[in-house]
Image 1 (cartoon, rainbow, N blue to C red):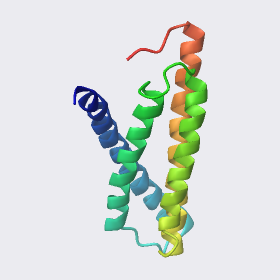
Image 2: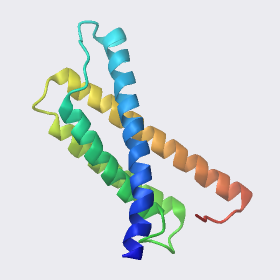
Image 3: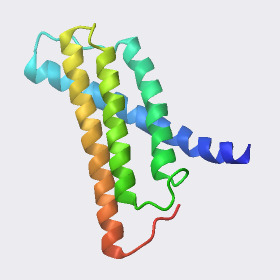
Length: 142
């Protein structure tokens, strides 16, 4: 039970941060999409996007903690674990996009923008962290 709590507490916190970032990115992308690309696009956040955001945030946080937090792969260096994580993120976001295929095309385009932003942001933060640890020679600790 103690191990489960030790795993779930960081997942809960990270999922809340990911969900906040996802909703902020989605609102910003929707506003920019409506302003720049398609002015007739009347933007609202559909309820299904919120539900999908919650589910994806929990899965992303669990993947992060499981793969990068040292719960599963402890001896592998950070960069190969990051590659595995980014590949699993790409699969997850692709499945999220496929869920929106029956929806209107503009919302699917908007989902592509948000998914691309998320992959780029997480990849950039992780690569910057990897470079920092390699340059300073520090070890990964919690």
